[in-house]
Image: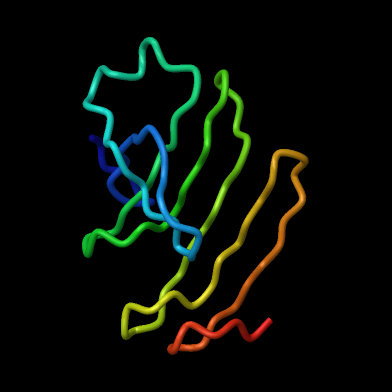
Length: 100
């Protein structure tokens, strides 16, 4: 685990659920990436909220989510970039409803 300007970086094998923000699961201990072709990298804030999620496949970025939150802690926005570099943005109200 390391800290950067974006938050605390941790690595995981996968995620669970279908709602945003995705929930990263099965944390990989430090030094455990050596024999992994695919993993998820997450940057977390001081409240342990996921700020950035990246899916890394064979050292290439395949998927990226950037999340921001309402003051209440509810998801406010999700910026999703796919493997082709296409980006979409979802905006949510505090009840979790998609606004656009």
